[in-house]
Image (cartoon, rainbow over all chains, first blue to last red; front, side):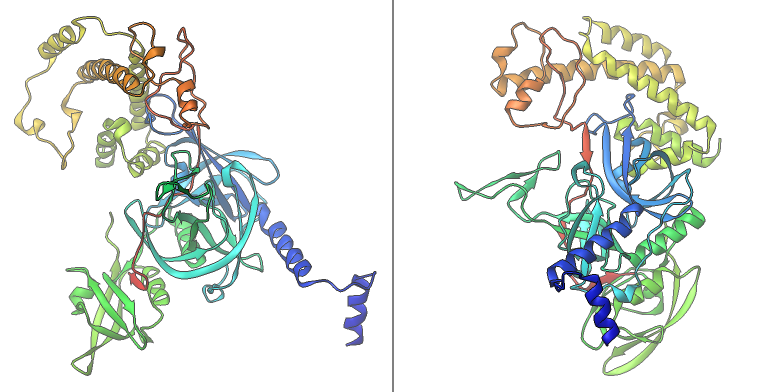
Length: 343
Length: 193
């Protein structure tokens, strides 16, 4: 104990104890310093030769982060969708041309490759380590301000959202200040581990972004104006999905998923089937809407995120047992997970 | 030419109407197929040249003359070739290269002429007609866009007209900072797999 006290006293020569705020500040700075070299700005240059749509910008800037030391970078597909040439700006000022190594439209994630070595990849947090209320540190490039940081919380997990009419499940919700240009940004936890990648934001009623992404005051009830730049809710793709997609893209250049063809809603002791895809694996196994699922592949059907992860990470066909409650009796069904059909 | 090439050629024919995922599919394919990359280069240069045509006035009767010469050049189609290949989309592959070029020329000229006319009316309705001193069709100028509080980030290249107005169709930012907007928060707790 004395040794600990001596060490504490030596680290504070004036004998002044560090306040909680100072401690938080130091920890956050340390995390930013640790994670910053892994974050990049992704610059997509449009065609500009007539093939470009007249309604598209000449240059799109977004964010991304390094996932392997030999030059693999994860980013959001939207930032490069119109790009003819892609450049990546590193924290040390290096600007390298990148190529698209693979794209997964289901998660809107793209894998870029740059010709460089010795890069610092992020380390993904374990799924169990991501919980509501955890500190979330965002490192990204809002409005082109490279390698900026912002602090918030993981304010929700397992969120389902629709972006451009496409459904995204099992998303993280964050209160970190998410701005235009943050798409693909790194959301790190208090240990500097990657918990998510910024995917989108929800702008509450009354604040409509203009085409340049700026928020403008919108009149409400005649003369009541809301201030521009109000808060928005950020959504991020969780680390488990990122790791899975990155591994598949790096290995195969595309992502194939396992598929059961079912949607469930969690109840207290079981999950309720809300949708079954006709002629899909669950349908063929005899699972029907409003069935109460007690167990899925030997595990209680309460943690749907874990079950979903297991299913989508299945390679090829895999038989699993599904126990459902029907008319007060448990019934076992044999379901074969299949490869998800292509778009 | 294999099946994948044929599909990509179909997507290329959509030009600027191609969806984002279709564009990425094109880019992915041409990175490994030299023949399709050449085709894409040709298409782009053609579209680029056509885009320039929008700056000029269309000579009277030009469209009719080109269309007449086109009609004489279009070969009689077999029934099997003329059938569309996909829902809602035409496959222009049955046209010879030269015919395609000519057809696009006509379309480009017509669209350019029509768009300019529409643009002129748009300026009048916005109350900026007094700046259009002569009878030249005019789009919303960069100056007016600033006054309207639009396009603050735009760096639209000047087309070198006498009153230094920039002719554009809509305020398009030169640089866009990417972050998609959520259009709907869905029912929570329901997970599909």
